[in-house]
Amino acid sequence: MSVIAEVTPIEAASRLMRKAGLTDSPHALTRLPGGRNNRVFRIERDGPPLVIKCYHHDPRDPRDRLGAEWAFLHYAWHTCGLRTVPAPLAADPASHTALYAFVPGARIAAVEPRHVEAAARFIAALNTRVARSAAEALPPASEACFSLAAHLEAIARRVARLEARLDPSAPYFETAAALVRSRLVPAWRRFVRNLTPDSTPLPWCISPSDFGFHNALEADGRLTFLDFEYAGRDDPAKLICDFFCQPDLPAPPSLYPAFRDAVLGALGLGTITHSARCDALLPAYGIKWVCIMLNEFIVADAARRHFAEGADRASRCAAQLAKAAAALDRLQTT
Image (cartoon, rainbow, N blue to C red):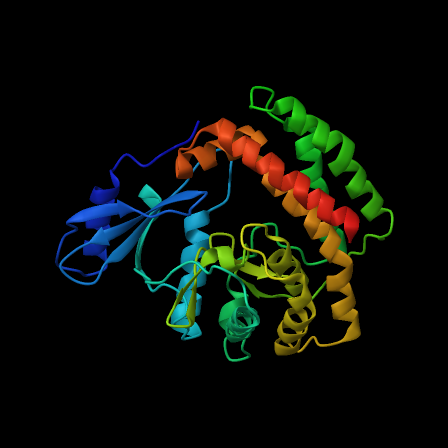
């Protein structure tokens, strides 16, 4: 059962504003769209608007979303001096809430080369040599992979979970089960036949994780990046592959080589070996994202989506099934 903070969002906002040293009080809260795991509200007040984020918390899901995002934003804002992220103002782990500066802007309508270039610069700025010692103190990202074997094991767990734990009470359960059995599992087995698990340690970088233009706003040609609840240390190949596999607002595949080379070059990894690892893992991460699309059919994941979105589960299941089938079609043609 989901555990939700006892305080209301406006009560939590008042507490956080006091904790941040602000002397006024919230006048009203407006729910902001977009979050799939959490609830986000704009706070109206005497001064500039703020944002309160209410993080989903469930005993079945051990991820510390608030802790990961707060640590990342503190590092990006204070250590790296970045202003392309929201300013972290106050956090309250007891109520699973945090206060951030409000970021104006609009969602990107269509991804252009300049957006991808800005994303690569953001990764470079997070990974300067000057910030390396502070970066080492950050925790691993969610499902961080530091060897080829770890990559394969993480995706294999996701595939196996769908094989074993689809919710039979979910709408369209039979259709989802058939998709997993007849298309997803065979695609994964075909892929792993061609790779040998290797436990050799891989280089790491600071990764925003779940990084893409679905988590960005644009104002006056300037991008601000959002949502870092899975962030931390990770293999740059995973960051690069996830960036091009996330389905909500994908970057054009034609820009993959330029982004890959820009990120690896900024990290001092611009060799054929590291480029080849990214290329080899890209189809595997396509399969991983199909698994993520089907999380709606897992009980704990569906509860998190309901907490954040509150929409009809049948509609969510139908939409995610369509996305997963389309993604598998694309994998078969690449």
